[in-house]
Amino acid sequence: MWKWKAESDNNDPLVARSETQQSKAKFVTGSTMRHVVVMSLSSSIGLMALFLVDLIDMYFLSLLGEIELASAIGYAGSILFFTTSVCIGLAIAMGALVSKAIGAGDRERAKCYVVNVFAVVILSTAALATAVWILIPFLVELLGARGRAADLSIAYLRIMIPSMPVLGLAITSGAALRAVGDAKRSMYSTLSGGAVNAVLDPIFIFGFNLGVEGAAIASVFARFAILAVAFYPLYKHHRLITRFQSSYFLSDLKPILAIGIPAILTNIATPFGNAYVTASIAEFGNSVVAGMSIVGRLLPVAFGIVFAVSGAVGPIIGQNYGANNMTRVQKTITDALLFLTGYVTLISIVLIFSPDWISSLFNADPEAAAIVRIFCLYVGFTYIFAGTTFVGNAAFNNLGKANYSTVVNWGKATIGTIPFVYFGALWYEAAGVILGQALGNVVFGILSVVSAYALVNHKKKQELAGI
Image (tube, rainbow, N blue to C red):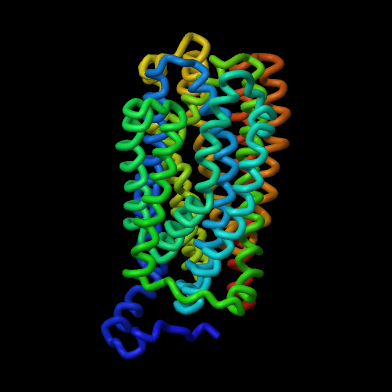
């Protein structure tokens, strides 16, 4: 079924040899800690470049001296987090299926998965972008935005949302590169997007005097850059792009959706929980929302490796699972947790000495600065447990139990967020909202990693029994 090759490749021994070399599963041998560190660093550098540009966006907009601009980005960010989470869910399906096929030595199946996931991305994101674009005013109001902050949020989203299919293809292309072990080129794609955004931001915001709309236009150009740089090596170097065939698409649709739908549900749980947090914070005014916006842009820059770890560790788990080596899967999880703990501890110590400097950089007023201070002093260390959740998700998604991720993440977004945030706000106002969310993350981070180890042990028993 999976025998198609491009006609021009059939009689080319150099291409055949190249494809054999590229098909080799690089994560089934060697140090798992080394694989974890290299993949995490490569993935996080690209991610942090993008998030750093978001932080630069916030800095440039803060120079305009309008508090509503920062709060508008905060409201819009909650909605963009939702749309991006859908794209990440589909990328998880791409990474899990392609890495497992590569680990099993089935390159033709990997090719078809790549093309068919792309087809799912185009169809689903186009439909969702249309629906969200129509509902933008309602969604912004639902988050608590009012007046000029609401108008600015709507203007920003009207430009960003139509590019959702481009973002989806860009993210899934990067996932396919990581699935074959090419974290370097995946990193280059996101770095290119960050560079494009960094160059165009001041041009559109100040040069053309477009303000928040200029920031959005620059971000759209960045999405196209990421897609171009990620797609090219898939086609040219790895030769993982084959012809689309409807019969293969229909047969692949079931395994794609079996991972993709739970992964999407898993990922949209986080923006759902964050939307509740944003709405709770909005009760305390635009200055507090602006402080949360600064934290929201700072967080992924400071903890980029934490956010990258699921996509970085997933291919390592997937290839070893495809090769039926559960001992290495378990070792990968342990090494990822050790690496994350050391990294988060180091960054958290740096943040403790940084709140005043960060607040002054973004011209934060006293209320916004208080939010930044709480995050830097008390919340940083809790991202160890956010990391354990991401590692658990990677294990669930790549071991055929994506629904476990859905249960854990929705539990965190509801049981682990709403009561903690509600009572935190009731007892300690805005500070309680932040600390309540952090406490919920700790509880569900522990639950996630315990469940992941239990799943691996179950799989190991099946492996020993020859099931």
